Amino acid sequence: QKEVEQDPGPLSVPEGAIVSLNCTYSNSAFQYFMWYRQYSRKGPELLMYTYSSGNKEDGRFTAQVDKSSKYISLFIRDSQPSDSATYLCAMYSGGGADGLTFGKGTHLIIQP
Amino acid sequence: AAGVIQSPRHLIKEKRETATLKCYPIPRHDTVYWYQQGPGQDPQFLISFYEKMQSDKGSIPDRFSAQQFSDYHSELNMSSLELGDSALYFCASSLGSGRYEQYFGPGTRLTVT
Image (cartoon, rainbow over all chains, first blue to last red; front, side, top):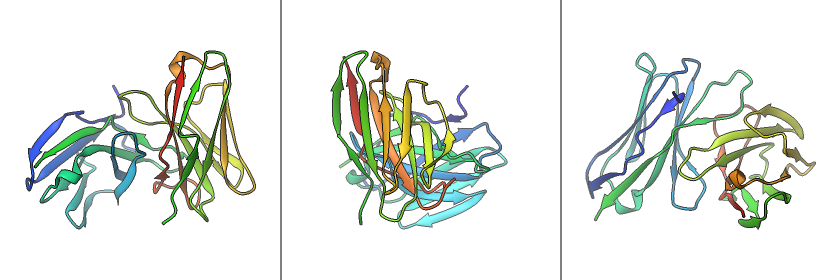
């Protein structure tokens, strides 16, 4: 079993809908939680990061972390066709370990 | 804003050949990370450098080596290439070591034939 599980999709929703993307994880050492957006043939782009449990909002994006359930979410409000991409969750434990642990990514399609 | 630069963007090599990938971090960033992303896979951490010293090591094969130079750019050297090495190779950079805020470059697509 992978440390981070993420449904690969594809997830197809109409423009303007609220999108919910989720990841679960098994390693309780993870302290930082990130969401990256990756367009086809491009590098991952850091969208948001959250430390420990709680919510963080940035424009149309809201990240939620529930450490007790080992579950994180990214919500996108008023979704736009330009939001169509693969969204990867990533996690970091710190403590001398440098590498991020990624989910497989969810392919999101926003239909105009 | 300046981003991470990687070169070349595409590389085709034959089995058993060698390849060198280059990464130029965001200005003032002192830490570089290398990741490998196979087809349909998530990025896997290979190795990282901080202030020209290896900082952490992930699932990097012994056939691969890397270093960071005085201007903070980094090179990933890959020898005895195998078909399974075909992947996207990303470099990321951060300010300070052991950082969760890692900014990725566009990647180098390596194809081994």
